Length: 430
Ligand SMILES: *Cc1c(COP(=O)(O)O)cnc(C)c1O
Image (tube, rainbow, N blue to C red; front, side, top):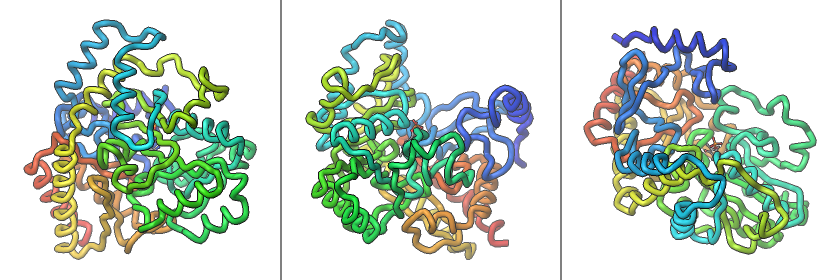
């Protein structure tokens, strides 16, 4: 029997009176899957506990940051030591230099980084520096890719925007998006046509090099290379939004796994160790346009916050090649297990993956773009989600979101989740 959700429901009722929708980020409200959002009391390793005392194996991992699991002792020790010295100074610190060096050392083509507080800010600021550096206005993005909630990029976005079916958000003016061109992902003809017609106006092409906010929809072979080639020839910049994939699919992100070097990279999630920290970076000649070196303004009262920096640095230092091999192996085990569970139950499902990133599309054949991701059976995903949640397995509350394993998950944890999925799959078939 599923445990009580009374304490969560009481908090949700109170929250809805004082916080819009009761949450501080829309997908947390469980709108797409129904039921009571669980209010979380704490987490340890691969598990988190809600305010009713129910324990869940966590496959959301705070939407990506917790690659070491909850409350990793070394990460917490580093954050506690930092906060014991003081929480913020509004002046530079040694650890910021070390974190910047760590990122620069890990990612090809990134010589300089600027730290921000969120992935939204990183993406927004990278777009600004790209426009400032090229002196051009047009930004090209892809339908279903999510780059945070800044005005320029909030067009046909993935993640919560897709979950709630909001193609365009009220409050974002036509002026803010008139220079944003949206193309279908993996459509080579469309991007070639656009460059043939308007190449000289394009400041930057931004993409999630492995999109994971419309489910996981990897690039077709040669597609990232095509974007690199077209932007280079037109004097435009290429921005990889690796807020999700950076330090997740490999230490060097998709820049490393694809061998395609963009001009700008945005980081977030894993890089901040579970604290509000993100970054964007690129070669010195591009990043040098930023103030105070150059004229492109970007700033932040809490940017490079010492506690967040300490946590991020501790996390990145623990992520070696063996860590990624282990994550990939855990994902293999889970994906194989899910595949077998659904096949045995006769439930049609596709599980697209890239390294340890994966998602589940019901009733869909291979998905190559946002239209395909929307065509999946999201109602069935909601039933799957709720069946798993009732059995103590916390999956993303939307079929548009990726699932995450952490280094704290064990093979036994994965096997327990596969067994639950086999059980739920029988219900879905019936
Ligand atoms: C999460 C995410 C963002 C936004 O980051 P926030 O920290 O939520 O502002 C941007 N881009 C991608 C690819 C993301 O996954």
